[in-house]
Length: 274
Image: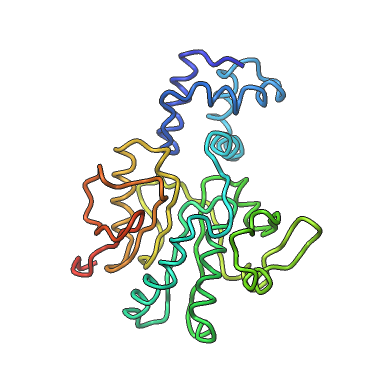
C-alpha cells in the first residue's frame, strides 16, 4: 500500500510527538512494515488507519503501530560487554555507597524481556547468598503492550539463549518443549514489568536509580529528543549512578553532564549533590 506525502507527514509528526521516533526518509520502511497488514485489516489508505490510531482509547493501535515501526529483535546477554561491566565494575561501585540495601535498576526499554532477565541473572550471580538481604528487583518498562505481554510470559526460543553460559541456562531456565525455554520462578519474581512512554516529561518513580539501561532506543530519536531524554535520565540517577546506551549509539553530540566511562557507558558524577 502506497503512503501519500500528506499521510506520511501526518504519521511522521504523530510518531515523533507521541513516541519520539524519527521517521525522516522512512517511507519505504513504513510501506513495507504496515502496508500489507493494513490491507489485510480492511484499510484502503493510511488516512483511515491514522484516524483509527488517533481515536483509539484502548492503546492497542498505538502499541501495534510502534511495534511495527521499531525493531524489537533482541536476545539474552546482547552486547555482552555491558553485562561484564555491570558485574565487575558497576555493581561493586554503586553497592558500596548504598546503606539501605535497596538497589534500584531500570531497564527503560525492555522489549520482550531478555535485557532485564539478563540483568537479573547477573545480579543473582554477583550477590550470591547475600541477595536475600537486598532488594534487587529490576524495573522493566516499554511502550508496547505486545512486547510486555511476551516478557511477562517469560518463554523464549532456544536461539535467544545462545549467549548464556550453559551453567546459567541450567540454573535459570527450564525446558518447555523441544524449542522453547521458560525463565525460572525465581527469575520471574525478580523483574517487574510495566508500561512507560519515555516521551513523558516526568519520570514518575519515587526514588532515583543506581543503574539505567536504555539501549538501542535513541537511534530512533533526533538530537533534540535524545538531549531531552538524556537530561531526564541524569535527573533520576543517584550520584555515581550509571547509564548504559546501545553500542551503536553515542552521546558525543549532546550537551550532557554525564562522565564518559567506556563505549556506551556513562556515569553521573559523585559531586553533583543529587
